[in-house]
Image (tube, rainbow, N blue to C red; front, side, top):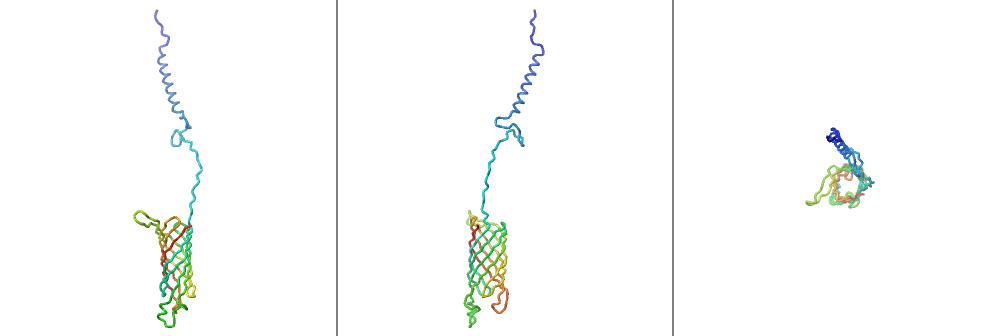
Length: 229
């Protein structure tokens, strides 16, 4: 009696198809299942893992603006027709922007007519040998030449070349005259609150001390320290 096969002839083929389907389903599940700790959704850049970063509040540092400056200066003041004398004064400034600033100045010097006293036998131009000259003005300035000043090979400080021009008043020998001031200067910044500056300024005003009223040019050369607040 012949031995009968319990499985039909198509059984091996069905088993092969079933195994292939099971492998495909397992592979798809492995691709769609998110790793531990992830969200399972791709980010905007296509990444599978989107990190959950805890945001924290950051306090921004506050830096002093240091727009106000106060300076002391000293130098020489060449009064036309009366020679050169020492001058000293005070400056108060406000920096509107990085390039534009305004500045008020008050200064004083003593002017002598000694040369005229040697010429005229009856005395000089002034009632006394010296007369006090005081002036004040308000100028606008522009920082037009930023750069650096080197001290040796390895040390450099920020510098600013600037132009100034403005108006004021001069009190000299009993006369108060409107004054136009203009000039240029160089400022070297050593720290965020201290600078050294040098200035050359011309003060133009009229005088009639010598019998005829005329405009005079009075050149001032000075240097000083400036503190920023």
